Image (cartoon, rainbow, N blue to C red; front, side, top):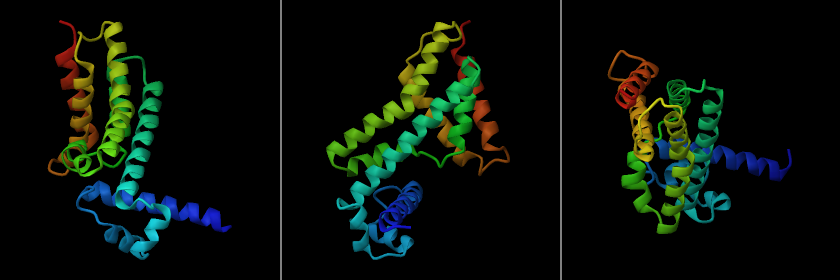
Length: 195
């Protein structure tokens, strides 16, 4: 393996490790020392891959996560039957197979700690990657006559928050998180169907 390929592998491993740490504790609670210790390198070595330090690393981690979510949600939509229930359930299955997003922590704690430009970039990418695919299926469901007119951005954000909550709720109940997600979707749809 040449040095460039080895460096690329190291960068990928670093991004994966940093994603796990940031996902568990958030941007403000993770230090570069934490990441360096977990990666078993000196802190200065991290600057080789991320000269901008912790903020640059965090932004890259979140961008990758959002792009992975965009791809996964679009794949779930394309594999689903053309019904809102099928689409939401397949999107929920995909989301639950990923680490929790913890969007509330991201909005309340992580983004305010970033530079305004980075925070704005991540907010916009989050909307494109997470909210817009769900808005799309809600708009299509409305066109098919499945649901009444709703604020699709609000409903998409609520859906993401509710499914994200299933990551943690199943720990305190004897119900699998997939069942919690299905129940949540049923409640959402029964409240949105035309009467």
